Image 1 (cartoon, rainbow, N blue to C red):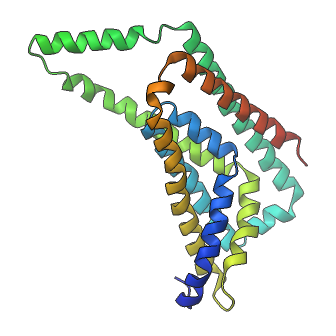
Image 2 (cartoon, rainbow, N blue to C red; image 1 turned 180 degrees about the vertical axis):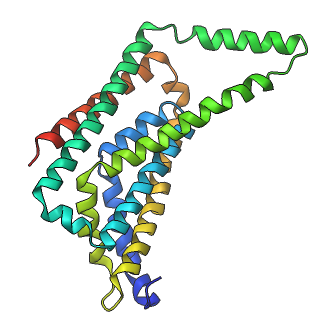
Length: 239
């Protein structure tokens, strides 16, 4: 924690206000969080946690001054920019392919069959819990993939690194050591965005009755996938 706590607390309102403006600006992370939230609240929230882990890591890197090397080296920045563009386009194409596959599959048949099996099992005196237990390992893997997608997208974005370097030092109180102050600010930034983007996940969950319709969900995935591809292409062509 910074040495002069009162001075640090004095800058927090302005810092949190800036965090709101940053989070409210649509970007790749927002689209990925919405895309994952279309699958489940768990996937959406784990994507948020992955993204904010990346935010905190970039804050630590900025506090150590390493992102200055990235900002100063055009070759390093361009390399990360291309990697970030590939990641974005990859996520977008994956989303579009999933939406296309859902269009040609009978999405209602599997849930209906599963409900029928569960009902038959219950009627026979069976217990559906063993089936749920068998499904837990795939759920864990899906959760890890959601977390990894948020982390990878953030870490592969050179703009996130350069932005952390330019944003955080502005709120370090005069006379405070920069390293602990910037790490503290990065932690507050990440925690704030967990709550902010958590509202996105909650809202998508509340709209589940509408979104769960096959046609609506497929169209939303097509839109989010297309936006991710466009953001990736824009990142690739930017200087």
